[in-house]
Image 1 (cartoon, one colour):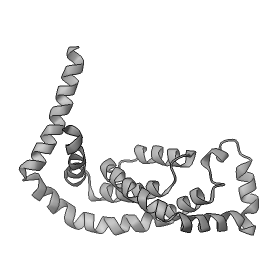
Image 2: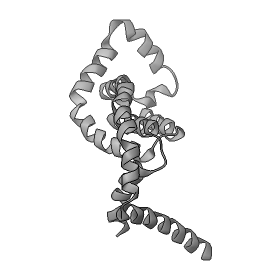
Image 3: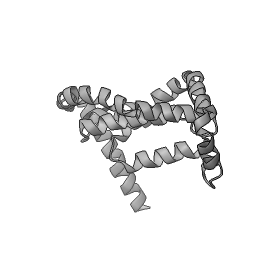
Image 4: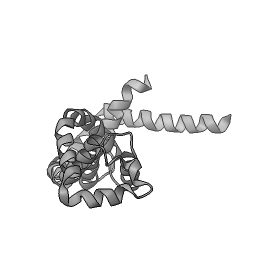
Amino acid sequence: MRILWKPLRMLADALVADSSPRQLAWGTALGLFAGLVPKDNLTAAALMVVICALRVNMTAVAIAMMASSWIGTLADPLTHRLGEWLLRHDRLQEFWTTLANLPVVPWTAFNNTVVLGSFVAGLVMLYPLYRLVEWPARRYVPALQKRLAQYRIVKWLWGAEWTHRILGASARTST
């Protein structure tokens, strides 16, 4: 039964948790960025390490990553063209050759047109996405937090999560 309620708990946590509108906006923007990049390379792993090291709303990151992973597969033809253009650009040839000769860089998969194009597209869109999400987050989230905190279902979802954590911790210590 806990599995069924987990998405609702995550949504309630993202909207009502003690995170600022900036943390929610950066979490959404970084999640969209990370969701665009294909996941089987060092670039995606390093991006996730950086995101986990930042103080952002992790629930917003997870929800945005899930949504943008679907968008990323649809955008692959566009990101392929962008990556191909970057890799074939005459002025960048020496840069790519130098980068490819470094020891760890081949694991980043920047020689893959889709990975490079997705990374550059996500990087270019990062700040505009943050600004796009920040304004509604500043304007509507505080009022929404107050309103949602009054509902029993939100209190119950929070209580269910805390109860699960407390009971899980006491069960582990008693064995």
